[in-house]
Image (cartoon, rainbow, N blue to C red; front, side):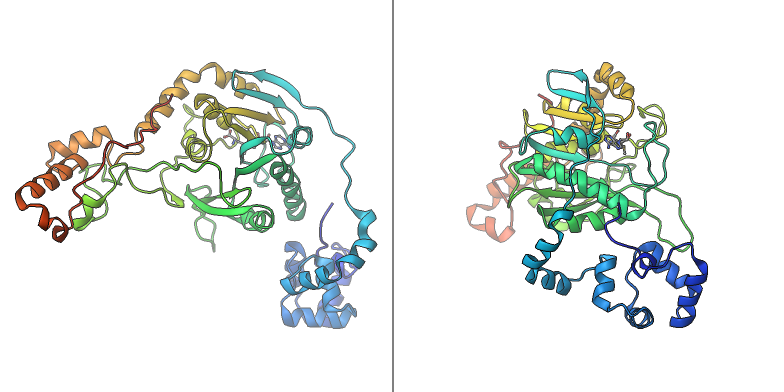
Length: 430
Ligand SMILES: C[S@@+](CC[C@H](N)C(=O)[O-])C[C@H]1O[C@@H](n2cnc3c(N)ncnc32)[C@H](O)[C@@H]1O
C-alpha cells in the first residue's frame, strides 16, 4: 500500500534483481551502494545521478519524480494547473473505506470518560465530526518494539507514514474548530508529519522535549529530544493558558542558575514564560512509577502540561493510543471528559484507575511547583540564606518609593506596583 515507488520499482527493476542493478550501476557509473541507498530510503537521486538514470532508462525526469512521489513546489503547481484533466483520469482510483472494520468494545466508564478496546481508526470513523476539544497522540514509533498488543512496529517508511496520515485525517475531522492537536513522536517522523499537518491545521509550535531516548550510535549525534507538534484547527486555539515555570535554581546552593542582574524586580512573580524547549519532563523508567512493562509510557507531568495549556474543565480530550492510559488518568484527575482506546489489553489502564490516589498526590506535587517564581520550599531556604525572593524584592521596591519620593520612581526603573492580587494559582486541583 505504498504511496510512491522506490527508485527500482519506478524504473521497472525488482529490488532483489542484483544482476539488473549491477547493469544499471555500470551503465550509469553510479555505485550499486548508492543506487541501493536511493531505493531503500525512497530518496530522489541527486541532480547528476538523476540525469544519468533518466538517460539510461529513457524515463523523463518529471515522470520519474511523479513515479517516486518526490514532488517539489513547481511540480505541484503544474499538477494544480492540470487538476481538471488529472481528476478525470484518476477519479475512480480514489481510496475507499476498508471493509474489514470491527466495532471497538467499551471496556470501562467513569463519570468523565470511556475506554474502548480496538483499533482507533474504527472508533474514529464512528465518531461525529467536530466533537473533540483536544487530541493528544503518542503512536508507536515504528522502531521494531515488542508491544504487548503485538502490533507490527516495523513497517516500511512509506507504509508507516501512510498509516499515520490515515489516523491523523480522522483526528482532524473529529477536532472541533479552534481545538488543539498535539503529536508526540521522534523528530525523524514528525519532520514528515508536520508537512502533512501544515496543509490541514495551523502550526503553533514544534516543542522539543529534552529526554535522552537511545544509546549513542557511532557517527550520529546523541538523540536527546522528542518532538511534540502543536497545531490548532483554524486561526487561533479556543484555549491557551500555558503554565508558568519557577526560576531555575541550583539544587545545592539555591541560587538562580542565570544572572538576572538588576532585573529581578521586573520578574513576574508568577514565574517565567513557558518556552518551546522543555527540560523538566522526566522519562518514566523506574519500575516503581512505570505502570506497564516493555512499552513507552509518558510522564504525567507532560500530559498535565498539555491538558492544562489547551483545554478547560469539561472539555473532551481524545487520545487514540492508550498504552498505559496516562492521558486518560490525567484527564480524569483534571476533570476533563475523555475518550480513549487501546488495541491491546487494557488491563494496565484499568488497574491504574484503581489506584488513582497515588497519581493524584504526584500530580498535586507537580502543580505546586508552577505559576510562582520560587516554590514554597525554595522561598524558605532562600530566606534562610539571605537570598532574594519575590516578596523581599517587592518590599525593597516599596521602601525605595517611600524614601525617594514619587518623582524618582521612573529614574530608578523600579516597578512599584507589582500586582500580586491577580496571581492565578491554577496549581490547585479543583
Ligand atoms: C507509545 S504507546 C502509548 C503510550 C501512552 N501514551 C502512555 O503514556 O501510556 C502506543 C500504544 O498504541 C497502541 N496501538 C497501536 N496501534 C493502535 C491502533 N491502531 N489503535 C489503538 N491503539 C493502538 C499500542 O498497543 C500501544 O500500547
